[in-house]
Length: 195
Image (cartoon, rainbow, N blue to C red; front, side, top):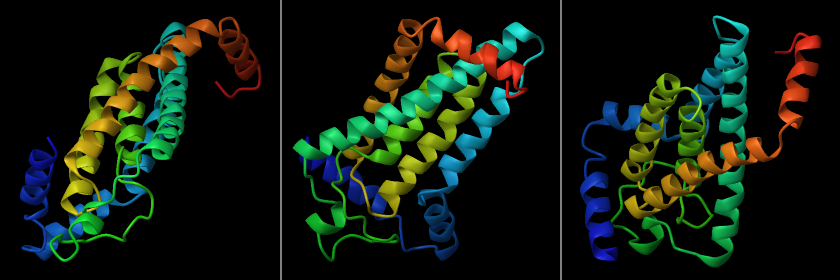
C-alpha cells in the first residue's frame, strides 16, 4: 500500500514544475485560506437562505452540522497526530519532490485540510444535498492541489477525507442528541434577528 501511495504521489507531483501558470493556480488553490474561505462564505449564505421558515431552519441546522463536523475533524486530526508521525513527502524523499509550497511542520497523516473540507461538505450534504455536492468540488480540488504541490501523500488525503465524512455523520448525531438546545438557540437567534 505504501509503495502504491508513493507511486501515485510521484505521478501527481510529477505534473508540477512544467507549466508555471498551472503551478501558480494550483498553489493558490492549495493555500490554507482560499478554499476554507469559499466554504465558510457558502455556509454563511446558506444560513440566510430558504423560501419559507421551515427551509430556513433546515438550512441553519445544516450550517451547524457543517461547522461541528469541521471542528470535530480538526480535533480528530490533532488526536491522530499524537499517534501517527508520518513524515511529509518532501521530508521522506528530499530532493525528489517538486515542492511548490511552504514546508508544513506537522505530521502528514491525516491531512487536516482534507478532514476540514470534507467535514464541511459532508455536514452540509446531510442537510442540503445540492449545496453539499457543490462543496465537494472545492474539497476535491484542494486535496488534489495539496498532493500536486508536494505536501501530502494521497493516503494522507484519503485518511483526512474519511475523518471529515465520519465527522459529518457524527455532527448530525450530536445535534439530535442535543435537542431541544439547538431549537431554543435558533428561537433566541430569531428574536435577535440573527437567524
